[in-house]
Image (cartoon, rainbow, N blue to C red; front, side):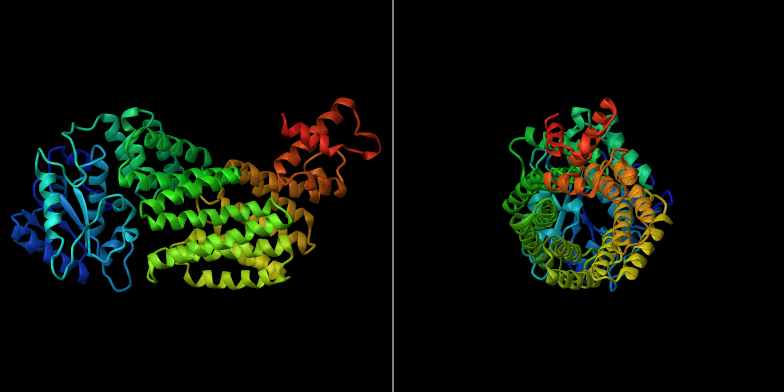
Length: 572
């Protein structure tokens, strides 16, 4: 082993492309895992299968446990028994009453690598096995795309079908769990791609992780690696979203969509992956580019596909995304249209909350219910601000309390989002000191962490603190300093709409911080009435500055034809 709980040799080299022979049962030593393993050992051996597990390991007395595990996973069909302990171990987190056995993390990384090393769309030698009552949404992301075999641990019902899958995988002329053709050893570029993906599983510094994602995208320009890119979407997208890299997500999503559209007919798991790409990829970057209607359309399309192919969890993520987008649409609207979008946002988030609650139950590593409650609170705060609905402010405060109760310690990003929201709710209730204290604590804690200096959440905390400073009539210079810091971060993150919103607030606070042309509050109100997009407003101000420089003065009497300037900007 290399000291990082990873295989002692590269699994890419260890795994050959020959047909698997025999079966290895991979399980956790929780009560359900041990019971399922015992049943499958007995039932599969009764059917003539060559089955082993670590239960008999002391009799074999291997000289190296990691080497033994590498060898068995490399050459056998691997059955992953999805008990509660196994699910927690796969997420690298142990439940309070489940003690993970020594080496389980190593074993599961080797199983992941076996999946990554598999060539083609079918014939994967890893088979997830679960009780008949198991919900597919509970499966770890790496295993969720695979067909899950169902076996009753009490009666053994379902073992015949499982044995048939194993036999087809072992038969050189057969069609296995997902079918396969004779395969050739992976090319050097494929080996490199998979090793980079494997390295991304580690907890890396932000800059290193983004560098590896860029390397994956560069390698995937090779058409022979297009399928590998699709398989790696979930991991790559997670890294990209953590770092807010819009352009990388655009590139990744375009590549995956291109592969999926050129593959016909799509397998069941490929349809489910398509829904994930649309919801977590396309809709995500369109929303951040502020193409909100387009983002809404893509998220809804992803939901339809997820529902058609029974991926309830991805459908829930889709509804969560739709709820967020509808709230942003409300912020760009007025009157009845604003009310419509806010009501739709709450409805979507309520549906997402119900779905996540039904899927996840109570004991979870990550509470998506908490994330939905926080988003619902944000929608209620927006209703208070946009429609002067005092009741909505009370609902927002209650929802933030509920979200705080269910968000788990591992959800640092969500908890920081919630801290910012609590501060904004406090300020809306005129508890300005509380709001500034919460925001100050959040900002200071993030500044102290490596890699967080250019975090989008930090930028939003700066914006929120600037807002509290302005509404509490404190020093404008403090607000301008926070807005400038936020603008810098948003620009670095390619969030042009958010950066423009900061600059617009700076302009309306002190016009000289942005432009040298004379700009009054009346000008600001007129521009806000003409367009909700701060990018268009700022472009109109820049257009006025250009005209002023050209003729040497502003229009006489301060009469500026802002409508004409906005039209010029829109049609350029």
